[in-house]
Amino acid sequence: GENVEQHPSTLSVQEGDSAVIKCTYSDSASNYFPWYKQELGKGPQLIIDIRSNVGEKKDQRIAVTLNKTAKHFSLHITETQPEDSAVYFCAASRVGGTYKYIFGTGTRLKVLA
Amino acid sequence: DVKVTQSSRYLVKRTGEKVFLECVQDMDHENMFWYRQDPGLGLRLIYFSYDVKMKEKGDIPEGYSVSREKKERFSLILESASTNQTSMYLCAINTGTKETQYFGPGTRLLVL
Image (cartoon, rainbow over all chains, first blue to last red; front, side):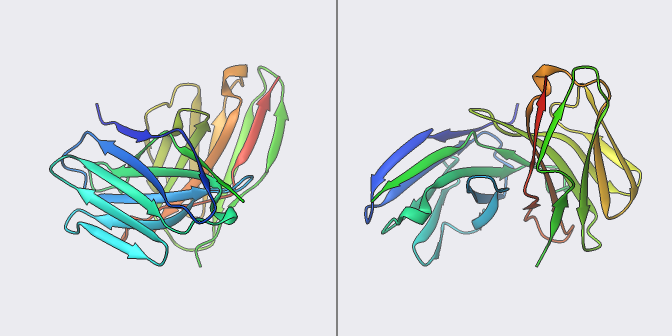
């Protein structure tokens, strides 16, 4: 069945360092890949997304890369700050035209001051 | 800005009780979703609705039902709550013309 694997499950970095979270998806027909950030006590919020016709997208300190051949996509956060501490989820769209996703299992990022 | 409201942030219920979780959106969006979130399992889709009175089972519908009588409101129903339904429940919407899903703040349900 459809599946998204996400690694690592927890990640600790020093403030100012970079953080990378990786996801692998199983359905080659997936064509939309969002990333969500969930802070304590809140619902997930979209931070960046990428479509299958693009290999990389950047928004200030956040970037996402996509390798369709390998079915991998990654989130890169540079110059991490304490407020980046949160749980991050990747997702991949499902085939069907109803905009449903399969989510990864989440990565808890801790940025140490 | 898209706004998704969930009726309760925290709920404590007894085993066997009927539980209603409400989700309300402030725009005329077609698609609404209910997920549950558990540590190590991510977000799993319970039910999906693409219009009034239209619904579709997600990956884990057992023990749940839904109701969508008006476009802006999507309710998740636990007919007879059980302890294994203790979880965080998240409602999401999307506009139908764009893939992005927008989430509510979540309802943390404890079933005793």
